Amino acid sequence: MTEKVWMGAIFLKDEGGYEILLKSLEHYKKRLRTIGQSPELKDSAAMFASVLNQQAMKTVPKIDEVVEKIKNSINDIQAVKNLSDEIPFFEKALMCYESDIDKAQNTGHEYFVKLVGDLSEVKNDLSTIKTALKKIKEYSE
Image (cartoon, rainbow, N blue to C red; front, side):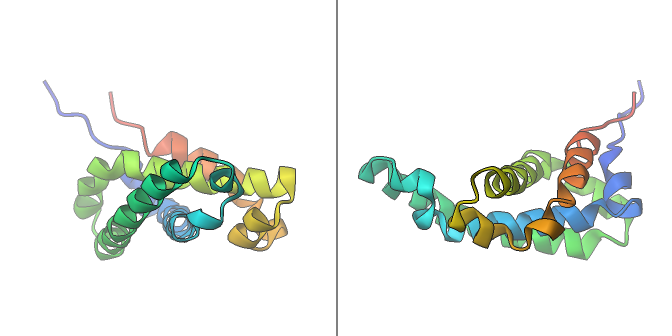
């Protein structure tokens, strides 16, 4: 029986997927660092907000670690394949970025607009995010 190969590695290395992934991870870190200012959190109970803030601060070092792994492995397809353990984390970062772009576009709330930056530029990332979410989960048959 042959071992399945993570096709997402090819997307990351050869199709430039690492660019949107790094951008999403940086956004995710920024989002977690400013989570206390989030309109969604301001509407929640104070106790819940505290727990969420604690979890967010625990996640930030993990983001830095994953970014470093990507940067150190992007030139070697075998090293990129070792990143497959991070697929759930990649998905979280990509979905967070996608969600915040949508919120910035649909609500125009200052927090989200400021968080994502230039809307005319980042809305182009939406299709790339969708592609990345699809491709990073692909394995050979």
